[in-house]
Every structure is written in structure tokens, then in C-alpha cells.
Length: 337
Image 1 (cartoon, rainbow, N blue to C red):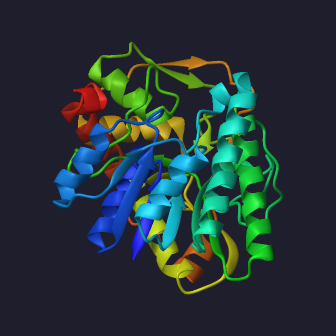
Image 2 (image 1 turned 180 degrees about the horizontal axis):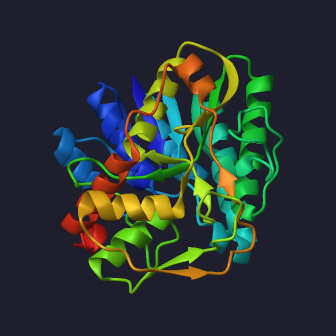
């Protein structure tokens, strides 16, 4: 079985590629490298000892995408490609709506042309309306607080409609929470461009001395220590969830929304203290005002993933912190080390 992985050179995409190859799938990777580095493709090939096709292209480019489908017999698509920074989406909404929606629509059109009916979509917990009861399950009310989240929401609806009107299609919408960690080898991991937008890369770069201190946004939430609580999931567990989704989708039709999370909420200060404990380093931090749009607590009900995909997160917070630090120490400047 051959899987097309869009955005396969990115953080979650690269780890999923490794898992797919380990389980015997053939893969083809397409990525425009806006949010990623081609060196990640080489690292994947080194880890597994297998060469696979890589195309540097934009998924919005229908002619370039068609050539990939012409050159290969593709059985399923995992769609990671897209712009992904919440803050940037607020300042550049048109860019986010244009890129994320058009890439998904273009991919569906070309899949239809070539008779490919299996689609795994990289969605997000940002589609859930703030104020949902916790843990949040797939039946919770939807509603977003930023353009990035709305692009995921809209892409989900596009894919539901495609599956509804094409009964031979099988679509899985994977809503995941907060991926952190890295491959245990330290060879692939999260490599943000510029100042990190996500918590753990900011922690690792502060521990390394590249950043002066961590800014903790808000300590007056209704949580045990006042800082925001999130469901942090190891990227390796998340990657396995995508493999399990391919296995599920290849045997079914229709459309399913599925959470991927641990079901455990950790605060920002939980992450900091665990990181310091398992790695023996200090992370200086400063409490700052809340960011607009942030909410206090979000964590997953992953019962449906267990039932349909036979999937469950296996790694704990110490694993996540240990593997994140190993990646950062071995690659102080990311893939450009």
C-alpha cells in the first residue's frame, strides 16, 4: 500500500513517515518546505534505511500535484500540509484561508480524478468551541477563536461533504491536541523557524541558552496553579495514531472525527517542573499577562480512538520532556546544526 504524505517533511509528518515505513508501507512525500526542512527527509531515510520519492511542490498547484498521481499508484493520502501558527493566522487571515482551504480542495479534486478514496486529515482540537465540558469528546459543539482553527473547521466540513456525496470514500478527521517530544534517536524533532510559537521548543531553547527566559502567559486561570492546562501528547504516539487511522480507513467508508490525546491535562508549570526534573536543567521563566483568545483548560476524551482505531497514547510526560531535550541538545540549531 502506498501513502502520499503531504507536509511529510514537517514535525508531525516526518514522525508519521517513520512509523509508516516501519510498518511496511511505501510512502511518497510532497512538501513546499515553507514550515519544514528538506534535511528531515534525509534523516527519515537514514533512520529507516530506505529511499522514497520526495517532491518539493505546493499542494495548491494542481498541475504539479497531478504529476505525482500520474507517476505513482497511490492508495491513501495523509494531509498535513498547511500553515499552522495561530498567532500568525490572526495577522494574516487571507493567507491562511487561501492556503489551507485551497490545498485541501485541490487534493480532493486530484484524488477524484485518479480514483483515490482514502483520506486522513490533520485537524485540531482548536475546532472545539471554548467552554466545552472536559474532557472534550467528538460530539462537543464546534467553534473557533482564530483563523487557523476556522480553516481546520472548514476543511473538515469540505471533507464531510465529499464523503457524503462519494460513498466509496473513507475520511478520518484526526483532531489532535498538543504534540510535543521527538523521535527517541534525536534525529528528527520540532524545528520552528525563528522564535518558537509552541511551549516546549521555547522551553528547550531557553534551557539551551538560546532564549533568555520562558514567558508564561497568565497565572490566574481556574487551574491548580493558575497556568493554562492542555493535553500534551508525544509526537510518536500521534504518529502511530495516523498509521492506525490508515488501517481503519482502508477497511471502511464514510467520515469519522476522532480525537488523539492522552486524556490528561498538564499545566504549563507541570511541563516546566517535569522538564527540569528529568533533564537536570533549569528553565527560568516569567509570568506575563494572558494572551487574547487563550482558554484555561482543554484535554481530550480519546475513547473513540480506542474503540475505532484500537489506539491509545503510550508515552508519559517524562518521555515527552526527555525526548524533546535530547533532540534539542543534539540539534541546537535544528536541522541546520
